[in-house]
Image: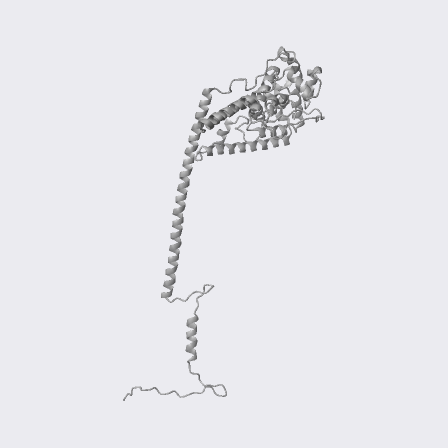
Length: 454
């Protein structure tokens, strides 16, 4: 990805990437690329990346990116070049936008479902207006306005990302304090005193660490020059140092490359093996260090440090005579007592709401159990009624002497056929002569016939 384009993706890419010391004993690769799983923290991060990757496949647009300055990118003027890209690029961008609109619709539906608003008719066109990174009026094609909105919105959101990270850390610290207090309340007096003593010992142990050099100072950079680069600190050269740590050779130090410089200082204070060292605090410390350097070195506020800006910073008085760096333990708490009280009140409200929901679910579960019992009883009654009806039909058939049916549904007449066969066996056989002609036997006169007189 081009160096200029880092204004978009590397504004805060390193905020979520775990940086490690640079091993100067190995030859660095020609170009280091950001990790694929690194995330800017934006809810449209994937869409942003895919759009940029597709645009860079167009030779004309890629050339414009390489020659554009930071202001052209940040204010969206570069979007006018979209009309000159190839047809296949525009087709792919159209597809990406339709996918993003579909994803946003799913998010909106999930949000409405979560607020029990299923019965509300959704006007997607109106709801999509709350998303500023695309044009909601055109949901099918990717136009120059979409690129302009995407760039401007991403720049604005990433510039606010540091503040959001500080707020997230503040809530983390307040939750940790709340849980500590609640745990102490659950203990008896003796155990509570023992636990409080143990916590104070851990805090004191954490405070005992070597001196932390101010980030960006000559002492801090010389320590990296010696420990990481393996060079003589007396031969420290700012220009050489810059080129050594511009790992991808794009002529600037981005935030990821800067934060890699602070690892040695952070290791003096934080060790993941120690119970007293909080790794969340270490990442907050890393952020504070980067902000300190950017505030003093990044003159044009593009969140990138050029060689010229870096060399100018080494001419300042603070570079050679910096104030001692104050870690989080040396500064005042990140929250006030009033903020902690409001936070605990919010937690209590949420716990009560969860309790109400749990009770509602319990009641609904009881209703389901009762309904299940009723349905089971009705099923048994129905089965009993069917059995009784079948029995009555059999009894009625027996009374009507109806022959049973055969396997194919035909009626069986075995008893009647047997009766007819017995009757045939009792019929008198008529003798025949040798020629097969029946002998005419005289009929017997009728017996006891009444005598009629003339």
